[in-house]
Amino acid sequence: MTHLIFWLLIGGLTASILFFHWPHFLFYIAGALAALNVLQLILYVFLFPSINYRTFFYEIRHEDLLIQDGILVITQTVIPFTRVQNVETEQGPLLRKHHLTAVSVTTAAGEHEIPALEEHDALALRDQISELIKENPSNEL
Image (cartoon, rainbow, N blue to C red; front, side):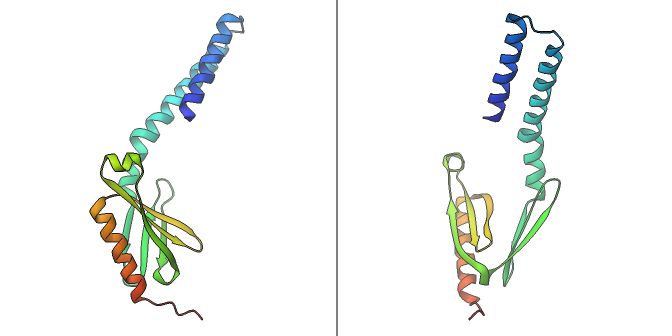
């Protein structure tokens, strides 16, 4: 949607230059905006997903879940099973088309997601986390 809005703005600027006889140096601004829009499209469609695929990592340990994510800034999140409130699977139309499912882990601090796992792997992961939550009772009062 963002790219569509930018292309409409660039088209409107170009049409205004042609029909209202605005200064022609605005063509350079429209061209620069178009080049930036194409560059952003290339980065977000081709480059960043492959980098994110290589840097994303999750591991289920005995007492917690480790999730590593990020492209420029890599973040590691450790979620103790005693803090987990809810584990659920989510599948939108695009994921459903490719037989993928996301696993969402909710704590009081927020929601953490493990995206795009195969359906049977996601269901097994959800069940495994649920069992580990039951095995690790909370030490709170």
